[in-house]
Length: 172
Image (cartoon, rainbow, N blue to C red; front, side):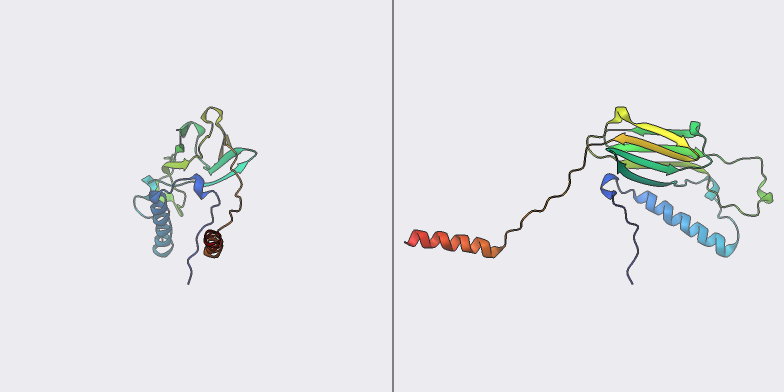
């Protein structure tokens, strides 16, 4: 049986973060235990969570959108280095409800941090961030990605013909 992998056409634009993968696996295991055991996994409410994101290039700009409902924009930090875009934030837990009053508890709270590799030539001084209806949208101009061109591949037969024709000219 073949395994399924999420398709990411812009994988070249982000660095692989093994801890993001581990957090995702931990989140799925927590959900599995919650379903079978009926209850919350201890320590999850204080742990890190990972907001869902999408990224694409449109009109010469890299667009990164993060789904972070319930996060106050004052609790967000967007920064950019020469090669990386970093989004940090925290979804705070409301302390008004007591633990014993919960029937279900599936919303993750706590700090998060996401890193995205940027293509060379991204213009940090033109980065813009907008927060609307729980979606953080970041745009940064990037250089055009050149389209691929076809390269002819020489085969050994053509090389042999060239050598043979050169050898017959020398013999004559």
